[in-house]
Image (tube, rainbow over all chains, first blue to last red; front, side):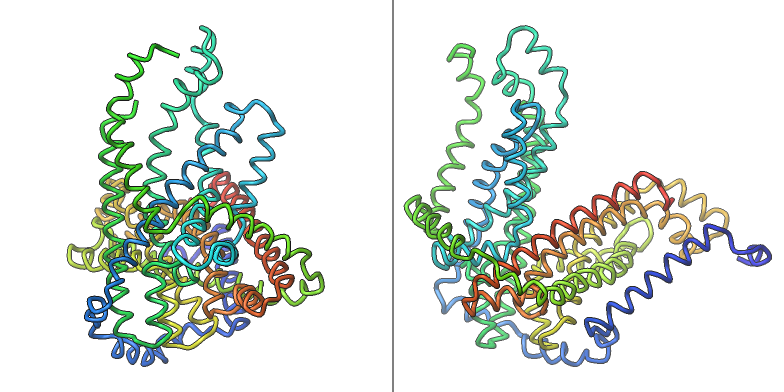
Length: 270
Length: 264
């Protein structure tokens, strides 16, 4: 750094310094506005220590004496699975309706795109509250919310995947007399299937996490159990549920990785 | 279409996976209590409820501005602090910089964080620190580590090693290698991950608000539980505008950074 001191600060350095100081000021103002003191984590760390002392050791007995734990786990898994499956199917259908190379009518495309965007910006909290009112609290409400979330997340992504598919194979078979449906089946589907399946498998483990959170808002499953334990301040039971949640999430992640490698690794889908 | 004989041969290998998927889905539907019957009655009830929520309470919009700003700031600060921590964790978790044991511990912590949903983290933080924005910011910041930390660590591991070696060979220490060899290379990825995470954090911040971080999520949950549905609809509209706005902002910024390559 010594040889840089004899020259004036470079333009690049000034640029960086400006960005950095503006960012620092914005962060400080924001911290003051919402009354957040980063140092409080260190000064008030004893609260966390007290909580951890309350939480450990986890009370695994509460899981065995309460026979519905296994069922709650199963419910969470089913919610995630069905949410991904049905959400994925609907998202794929909507994607075909909103990509220009599969849907020739602009009006339909715009309509579907508008619906998908509306679903995407709809906050999950609202969706789950409405479904809890509509079908009653429980795993079904959670599952419907997941279907909604998945449509929002993947409807647009899948449409982009379809749109970016290579055009020339489709044109080639169109020129020898294939119908529009045949073009979709033999040119577009083989191209988009691997990325679609990869994203759906990925979304399965994302939905697993969402399914747990939804339980807390009345979606049923293990999240609901956790919420119950929390509301009566049984911290040791909470730790037991958290450990189950961690194991569940890690296992689904491994499963989805394994399936992805298994299905996509050898190009079996073509 | 081709002849049925050919078609059957072609799709034969799919029969077992499809049937097992259907069986599993049916079982899952029983566990969830999902029936078409319930779906249709539920949908009609849901739609009539939505219709009942209209019209939004227009004069509540001005009351929603401050909570909305709070939610955005929680997400913003969570992303900023989270990103700083994730860079730190990512460097510790990359095999080409840190040593084996540090890497193992850092990877373990990242993985542990990844597998705990943010909402569980915030419930614990609320139990420790009480209700308020602080729990929200800390929960979101921790949430960043799981995602950005892992993605960045993988990015760093995939960097071209010759560049790092050449910096090292002219006598740079670890810090200089990180500062001049790694940071400029990961900057574009870091920015795109951060923007992506910011979008997620805005959504999460709404959700966390409902369980006690304050902000617009709290307003929404409160209006729902007080049965003030018109007010709730106002909050919904504000949230939708917020989410849409962030999405647009992030895509504009992403294009800007990608186009100019200012950060290299």
